[in-house]
Image (tube, rainbow, N blue to C red):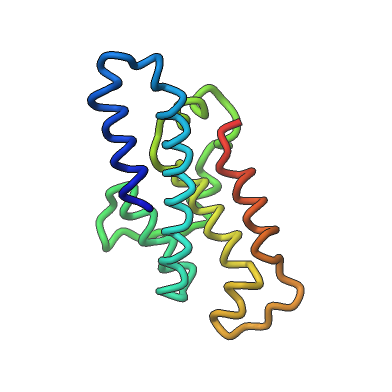
Length: 146
């Protein structure tokens, strides 16, 4: 699945787009949105594999921002320092990105880490925690550009 849309996106942005960019732009934007959702799924898989929210968040941010492995990271401080990704003109640039902005990915991963599904996977009590469909709705609202 990941390769199929990535290949289609490559051809649309590299080859065909050179000649008919305005015609293929809606397809490019749709595939970029698909790619952003796939990145959230990959982040969740990393959390399930590591079973440690802080280490997963640290790895995510360090990889995305190109930070050294020895750089200290605090998710709460990082999120406080970021502007609201739903406000301002910059949010429109995300339409053309294959990855959600890092603060959105951090927030999405934290939502999933608080889900009943994740709690049951790591041996915690899932009672009172939001279900996966509830989390998916919140994450969808979070990563949508509009």
